[in-house]
Image (cartoon, rainbow, N blue to C red; front, side, top):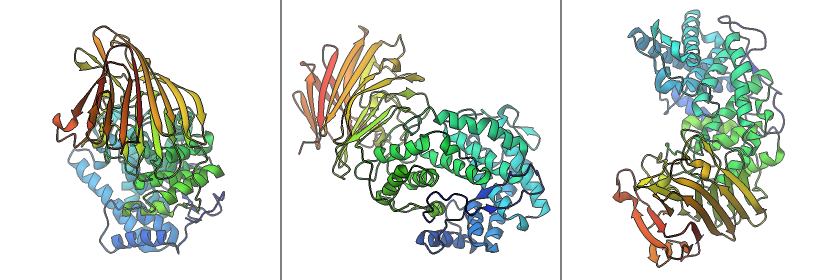
Length: 566
């Protein structure tokens, strides 16, 4: 889309509510098409993707949403014909399964895909009403109504009169990616149909729950981490459609959206192709920037009224390794304006207090040294036992969670993190969920990236676990990280300082070199260093990577890490 600045509602595609499930006035689904530049290469790519589907060759994950969106922009009826046929296919497939006494696809994986599936139906219902028959309206309405009802009534869910109860996973958890899908399905169908039941549910419960939840996360980001945190692209899209349809700007309820722009800019590696590997990385283990992250920033920029945040978003969108969407099913998101900003954030340090993440770098150059550190809430299933963990990057990973070298991307244990590992009787002591560690920033120099922080991590362990206390200081000065741990543990427990690295370290007394990383152990004075090759444990799961373990007497570790090794 063209950069329209603060213009939000100069032109809205507005279609009156349909007869079926008609609700109160003002309950229409609206999408803002005012900024679409039909002469842009982004529009041409999107149009060609949809035209291929019109010609009978739909690309991977093509959706009726693509066709309905292009009709909304161009007014060409062939796109509505395709959208209607695509939704009808979804409904027909559902009815076949229901007739067999089975669940339809929309109910799969705890209704995770209900958002994109029902939003495609809702948008097509709204913009292509003239091309939908009465019989189709009846079918579509029954299917959409049952889907949304089942989402919010898991114990009584049914299909074709047959009970299909499900767990209700995260229907009341606004921090979970499933919740966004449920709200998306409810919003699109509620607005398109005008059903007051669903609109009231959104206005009175589900949307306030979102704004209340994210109002408690100053600094932006997600408690699910950066892998599942990319689902905020859908959260921000919900904000956008609700704003365009009702005039209510949910994004303005708190600072989370603007803060998330800054969060992602600082969470991006200096090479601008990867991001901080926090939490599960189930799509791709190595945290590489992809279309989803681009969409998140495009959505956030489109909603933000903070000119500085919008400028940062534009810089990031124009600088990252994904300057445009790479997959056809994401092409329509590039219709949102990226802007022309070319200036990175002024600060080299960022602290997201709500999630407990700290990021610092020596400069915004691609050769800079970058630090990430975690100490905050551990409350989500996709989060990891990484309280107290650090990550170092300089041109490439220096010290990083072994999870990114795993096949699954969901290795959550402390043993794969850069923490102090506690063991009792040879068994790793797990960090507990839920728990909240705390971080204190002792001093910051935003101009050099220097930061001094202290974390109290004792709360991450149960009282009877054998870990009595663990406090970690991190001092990042001129690209050199000093980690100081003070611990108290039971007599039957052992503390091991560990660093996970991508290449095999060479041990030289109390020092080690792993590629460009230099590790120097200052305390304990009787430190013993040893190595673990991860593939020796499970070569199918752990594809590469090493762990450097430091043992010794006493209750302190002091370790210096820097990227100055040749």
